[in-house]
Image (cartoon, rainbow, N blue to C red; front, side, top):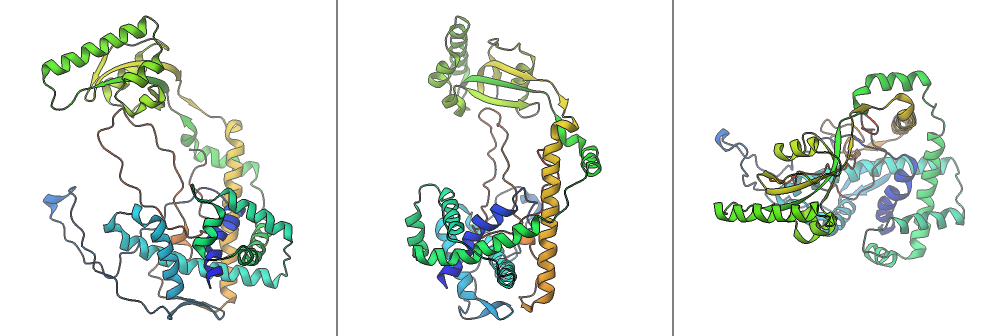
Length: 408
């Protein structure tokens, strides 16, 4: 039983990540926990943080069968094992009031992935796909490359309570599935030139590059409690630092020792940013200064800034030839993913599957994870922190639907 549970995690590393990769679409909103009460909000309290009270979930029978595919069964106990493993490693990162919803979504994911993996295992066995020792060695090497930061391979085996021999045996099924899916994906027709051009024309706005500047700065902060004298002293300090810079002082070194912005550790470097990301006074100065000049001291709500623009990029639109390869990769991935789910539907039609009532969610909907996105460089000392992201449980996900636009 334990080796099968570990297999679910490994298939995410070896199978789906290695066969059909790419951006995912936004996942469906998690279903509310059945036991969570409805909290009515007074319109006057809109935008305020209100307490959310969650009642304990009703106990579940670990022996109860919750999903079955052609006689292969998944029990409440097996789901609970995976959920508890996730909670031990990632649960602390989820706000307590959101934990019931996240767990319910995770339970749904485990059931759906059980169905997909069982169907694929049966198909791979029926196809008599062979696995050689070198295939297993390569899979183990791939697993070791993707270990969580700070954990060793032996620690993973110990945590999962499996031996290396158990793992090697379990990988045989995973590799068969990988080969099966790879073979299916290889049959998809490559996108035509007409499809590539049509995509580019309909998504041309997504390939526009706005005007941007690459800048660094030194910040002398004003505290909200500072009086006029303190603010004047802060400005005088900023002016003195600017004088040193004009005289030839090293900007990065001075930023590291004097700047009171988190960017100080990077020598004040804020990276490149377009209009609309910085506070108005800072943006106006950055987009009007000459490249490499030491600008005048600029006052914002955060304090006094000394800005140096290192580079600037004019607004432009990438041509089709510049993005053709990205579009081809994207459309191929899209065809692969559509083919994968079509194949799963074909397998489902031939199988006897028992699942709880699906509450309107199609197969695979909860397995489509949001794509990792790079965060834009915030305004110096941004006043409003970003909301805390809710990490998805580390259960494997079949290929997700692609993002609307590649490289946007």
